Length: 409
Ligand SMILES: Cc1cc2nc3c(=O)[nH]c(=O)nc-3n(C[C@H](O)[C@H](O)[C@H](O)COP(=O)(O)OP(=O)(O)OC[C@H]3O[C@@H](n4cnc5c(N)ncnc54)[C@H](O)[C@@H]3O)c2cc1C
Image (tube, rainbow, N blue to C red; front, top):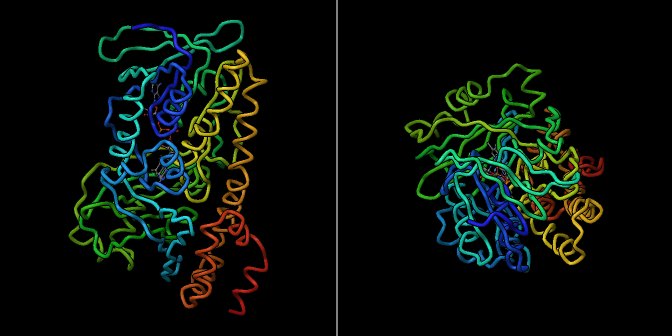
């Protein structure tokens, strides 16, 4: 196998696989490496939202999603700390935008990865763990790593290395930016169940008293499966000294909203935990000879915990800038700065709103008030539905006027 490529992508998750496909379409010779062999599991809530669907559409992969096991999502159910339930159907806009899916990552990521693998110009190496970077004249010029099968050390070179290797990114670590900021990081657990009663085509987000300021989720999957989990900001987990796993099972067994629903439900997996680096902290995502995507660039939404869409979006936004670098034969940070700028112009305002919402969500009486008011008023449900579908409108959640209106609703 040759050892020189235009671009090396480290990590074949949604960010890396999308990047490999975009770049190969631009005629670049890509090496895509992953330490796992696909299909592989990835600890996640498995919710695939609108931004991911946009990239799937651009890559001509949206139709094929129908063959990937999934549940189609049509709305969201919230519950307040005092137990009021609120159902908000998603607004599907005039362009016929799909509402979203819940698809196990072992299926969803495999779908993307296998498509990347069959794309002309993409060479794939599975079970290859990148362990270090190759540096030449202060530029990243390749990767070093180990073939996990043969235990052989190998080195590959390229004009550009893309770090799409998730929250423990070796690329981000080696360029010195993989710092964990506990206020901008989340710990989350996930377990698969079957036969949870009362599941519908809605994702469920429950602001349970004992789990605040985090939330408990139930996301329905195909054939009676469900992804169940809990997440909390890392600094809160430390401050409250909470054992998330115990707190989650206590909620499942004792909370009035859930104990009957989980009676007779079957646990199908271990409880797995992982971290989510929030985009409320702007990590520098570029430098001489490298750029970072997705979790490696710390792009997870700090309110919803969604990171798949932003990982794929970062690949979409990086692709034309990378093409500029090849045209100019300049792989310096002067060129890649534009990627960071474009990325943050596109997703920064939303991340900012989500961070503020996360802070507001810590005020328990306010959560009770909003959910109570909305649960009894169709007009407010419509307004919230519109707000969830539209980034600008979401900012209304942050204005005093919104709460004033609720007072008189
Ligand atoms: C419990 C939990 C629930 C979540 N729920 C949701 C949700 O419902 N919806 C949502 O949108 N997001 C959710 N997220 C966030 C989402 O999982 C991530 O944001 C998303 O996976 C980021 O994609 P990525 O491509 O950047 O990285 P990843 O999906 O993490 O992919 C990184 C890839 O890099 C590979 N890799 C890592 N290190 C190396 C190395 N050294 N060498 C070679 N390969 C390497 C890994 O094997 C992996 O395949 C959740 C996260 C957690 C932890």
